[in-house]
Length: 131
Image (cartoon, rainbow, N blue to C red):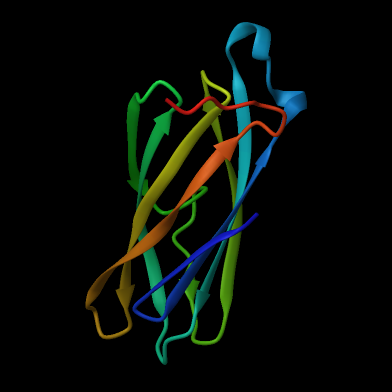
Protein backbone atom coordinates (compact mmCIF):
# COMPACT_ATOMS: atom_id res chain seq x y z
CA UNK A 1 0.00 0.00 0.00
CA UNK A 2 1.24 3.49 -0.88
CA UNK A 3 0.40 6.77 0.82
CA UNK A 4 0.45 10.05 -1.12
CA UNK A 5 0.12 13.78 -0.43
CA UNK A 6 0.68 16.84 -2.63
CA UNK A 7 1.78 20.20 -1.20
CA UNK A 8 2.67 23.22 -3.40
CA UNK A 9 2.66 20.95 -6.50
CA UNK A 10 5.20 18.57 -4.92
CA UNK A 11 3.85 15.04 -4.56
CA UNK A 12 5.31 12.75 -1.89
CA UNK A 13 4.40 9.05 -2.14
CA UNK A 14 5.59 6.56 0.48
CA UNK A 15 5.46 2.77 0.30
CA UNK A 16 6.38 0.96 3.54
CA UNK A 17 7.59 -2.66 3.46
CA UNK A 18 7.98 -4.89 6.52
CA UNK A 19 11.33 -6.73 6.50
CA UNK A 20 10.96 -10.04 8.37
CA UNK A 21 14.60 -11.02 7.72
CA UNK A 22 15.79 -7.84 9.49
CA UNK A 23 13.33 -8.21 12.36
CA UNK A 24 13.61 -10.20 15.59
CA UNK A 25 10.10 -10.26 17.13
CA UNK A 26 11.24 -12.46 20.03
CA UNK A 27 13.63 -9.63 21.00
CA UNK A 28 11.13 -6.80 20.41
CA UNK A 29 12.84 -5.59 17.21
CA UNK A 30 10.78 -4.94 14.07
CA UNK A 31 12.16 -3.31 10.93
CA UNK A 32 10.56 -1.63 7.92
CA UNK A 33 11.98 -0.15 4.76
CA UNK A 34 10.10 2.69 3.15
CA UNK A 35 10.43 3.87 -0.43
CA UNK A 36 9.83 7.59 -1.00
CA UNK A 37 8.96 9.04 -4.42
CA UNK A 38 9.03 12.86 -4.64
CA UNK A 39 7.56 14.23 -7.88
CA UNK A 40 7.87 17.90 -8.84
CA UNK A 41 4.69 19.00 -10.63
CA UNK A 42 5.57 22.69 -10.24
CA UNK A 43 7.01 24.91 -13.01
CA UNK A 44 10.33 25.44 -11.18
CA UNK A 45 13.12 23.35 -9.67
CA UNK A 46 13.13 22.68 -5.92
CA UNK A 47 15.97 21.60 -3.66
CA UNK A 48 15.28 19.36 -0.68
CA UNK A 49 17.11 20.95 2.26
CA UNK A 50 15.93 19.23 5.43
CA UNK A 51 13.70 16.45 6.71
CA UNK A 52 11.58 16.00 9.82
CA UNK A 53 10.05 12.69 10.88
CA UNK A 54 7.61 11.98 13.70
CA UNK A 55 7.58 8.27 14.55
CA UNK A 56 5.02 6.81 16.96
CA UNK A 57 5.39 3.18 18.05
CA UNK A 58 2.59 0.85 19.13
CA UNK A 59 2.94 1.99 22.76
CA UNK A 60 2.40 5.63 21.79
CA UNK A 61 6.05 6.63 22.32
CA UNK A 62 7.12 9.44 20.01
CA UNK A 63 10.53 9.89 18.39
CA UNK A 64 11.36 12.96 16.32
CA UNK A 65 14.14 12.98 13.74
CA UNK A 66 15.53 16.18 12.19
CA UNK A 67 18.34 16.41 9.67
CA UNK A 68 19.78 17.76 6.47
CA UNK A 69 18.64 16.18 3.23
CA UNK A 70 17.76 12.52 2.84
CA UNK A 71 20.11 9.53 2.73
CA UNK A 72 23.08 11.90 2.65
CA UNK A 73 21.80 13.97 -0.28
CA UNK A 74 20.08 17.30 -0.86
CA UNK A 75 18.61 16.59 -4.28
CA UNK A 76 17.60 19.22 -6.82
CA UNK A 77 14.34 18.10 -8.41
CA UNK A 78 13.61 19.75 -11.75
CA UNK A 79 10.07 20.44 -13.04
CA UNK A 80 8.38 17.28 -14.28
CA UNK A 81 11.07 15.08 -12.68
CA UNK A 82 11.12 12.90 -9.59
CA UNK A 83 13.58 11.73 -6.96
CA UNK A 84 13.37 8.39 -5.14
CA UNK A 85 15.15 6.96 -2.15
CA UNK A 86 14.78 4.12 0.32
CA UNK A 87 15.38 4.29 4.04
CA UNK A 88 14.41 2.26 7.09
CA UNK A 89 12.82 2.42 10.51
CA UNK A 90 13.23 0.07 13.48
CA UNK A 91 10.50 -0.15 16.11
CA UNK A 92 10.13 -2.04 19.40
CA UNK A 93 6.50 -2.88 18.49
CA UNK A 94 4.91 -4.70 15.52
CA UNK A 95 3.15 -1.53 14.36
CA UNK A 96 3.56 2.22 14.33
CA UNK A 97 2.95 5.40 12.36
CA UNK A 98 5.31 7.82 10.63
CA UNK A 99 4.67 11.29 9.24
CA UNK A 100 6.69 14.42 8.66
CA UNK A 101 7.76 17.09 6.22
CA UNK A 102 10.60 18.33 4.03
CA UNK A 103 11.78 21.92 3.71
CA UNK A 104 12.45 22.78 0.07
CA UNK A 105 13.94 25.85 -1.56
CA UNK A 106 12.45 27.02 -4.85
CA UNK A 107 14.54 28.49 -7.66
CA UNK A 108 13.51 32.01 -6.58
CA UNK A 109 14.86 31.34 -3.06
CA UNK A 110 11.52 30.95 -1.26
CA UNK A 111 11.12 28.06 1.17
CA UNK A 112 8.18 25.65 1.31
CA UNK A 113 7.22 23.02 3.83
CA UNK A 114 6.27 19.88 1.91
CA UNK A 115 4.17 17.43 3.89
CA UNK A 116 4.97 13.72 4.03
CA UNK A 117 1.72 11.74 4.37
CA UNK A 118 1.17 9.77 7.56
CA UNK A 119 1.74 6.10 6.85
CA UNK A 120 1.26 2.94 8.82
CA UNK A 121 4.02 0.49 9.70
CA UNK A 122 2.26 -2.82 10.25
CA UNK A 123 3.66 -6.32 10.54
CA UNK A 124 1.53 -8.24 8.02
CA UNK A 125 0.58 -11.11 10.32
CA UNK A 126 0.00 -8.90 13.39
CA UNK A 127 -3.51 -9.08 14.82
CA UNK A 128 -4.57 -5.75 16.32
CA UNK A 129 -6.98 -5.28 19.16
CA UNK A 130 -8.71 -1.91 19.27
CA UNK A 131 -9.78 -0.68 22.70
